[in-house]
Length: 290
Image 1: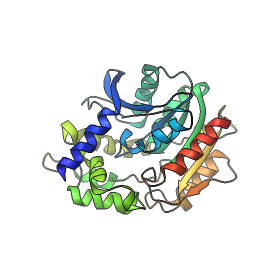
Image 2: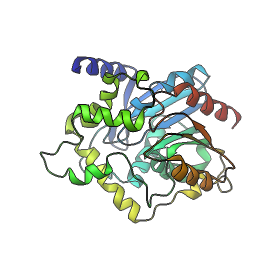
Image 3: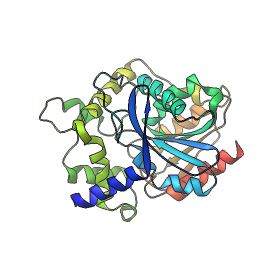
C-alpha cells in the first residue's frame, strides 16, 4: 500500500511546481488557459483536494490553480510562521502576487474560507467572483475536522493524526460519499501530505490557533454579503456534510451572502472527490457570467 501511496504523491507533485511567497516555499498545481480560478483548500488538506476539479475547469476554458498553504502539503513549515487565519490570509495575498494573478475568481472550502476571506478583504477589486464550498463565515461555533484531537496531541510522542487506517476510515466516513471514486491509496495521501518532514507539527500548531481566532469573534459576513462587495457570490453545499451540516452552516452562509437560495449537491464534506464534474460545471458557469 505504501508504494501505491508514494506513486500518487509523486504524480501529484509532477503535475505542479514549487514557488515562493512571503519568504515561504510552496507548491501550486495549475492547468488551462483563460481567466484564473483560484481554489483554496481547508484543513487537513492541500492542493491535492482539487486534483480532479482542476482539469475539468481547464477543459471549460479557465486557468485553474490550487496552492498549498504553509504547514500543509508540499509547502514549507516554518516554526515562527503566523498560523492564524489572518496570518495565512496575508500569506495567500503574497502568493497570488507571486503567481502573477491580478484579477481572479476565488473558490474556498472548509477552513480555506476564512483564509480566503481574510485575503479578499484586502483586495476586493481583484476578486471576479466568489464561490463558497462548505465553509464558515462565523467562527463562533464552527468545528473543523481533527480540531478536538489536535488539542490533546501536545506531546512529542503524540502523532499529528491517528494511524493510517483510522484516518482513512474517518475521511471516508465524513468526507467521501462514493468510496469507489477514491481508492484507499488516494485517501491515504491526505494523511501523508499532512505529516511530511515535520511529522505534522505545523498542522497541529495551525489547528490549535483556531480557538484563539474564534475567541476574537471573527465574522466574515462583510466579505460575502453581495450588498457590500463588488463581486458576485454563490454558495454550493454538499447535502450530507456531517462536519459543516447544511441545515446549520449552509443556511448561515446563505443568510450571510444575502442569497435567496444555495445550490446543493449529493456528497459529504470532501465532495471534490466524488462530485468534481458537478462542482466544476457550477463554478465555471458562474465565473463565465461574472
